[in-house]
Image 1 (cartoon, rainbow, N blue to C red):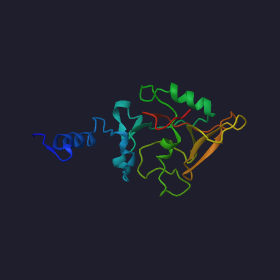
Image 2: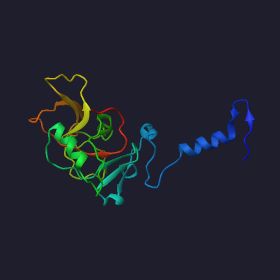
Image 3: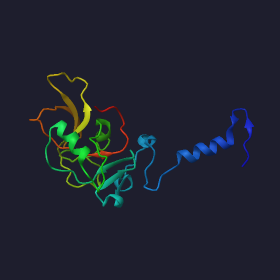
Image 4: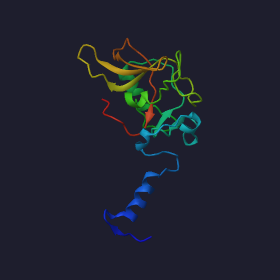
Length: 184
């Protein structure tokens, strides 16, 4: 196809190139992070259990993130949760981290009523409790005395802050992928 220069410049070739880039999907089924504005309401289409990770990880096609499929039931303070994710070998692979609050909250299905877990029906995750999970995002109102971080309560689909102190231990759900925001 020949490029033609019209009123708006080199339109034909550029339009074909842009269209090809917008519809690109790699072999793992991941889509660019621009997909965050997409809604995939069917959990069977949204989530894909990854055999490349020994079925221990799940690709979220809506966000492009890879989540650990089975979450540890151990409770950790915030600092230990971060270290647990960094050192965890899910599916024989390192490179995991604690998710930002936006990433963790992206899993909430607000149509699921308490007592939860407030995840999309038909999700492939295992051992997910209707409980609190840490995010890597420090709460804006953090002071030296409170040291708060954001968390998601999958019992009610709520988001709140929790003190990062040792006596405030909750669960960690690790993720892989580029960070959506500054988290530390």
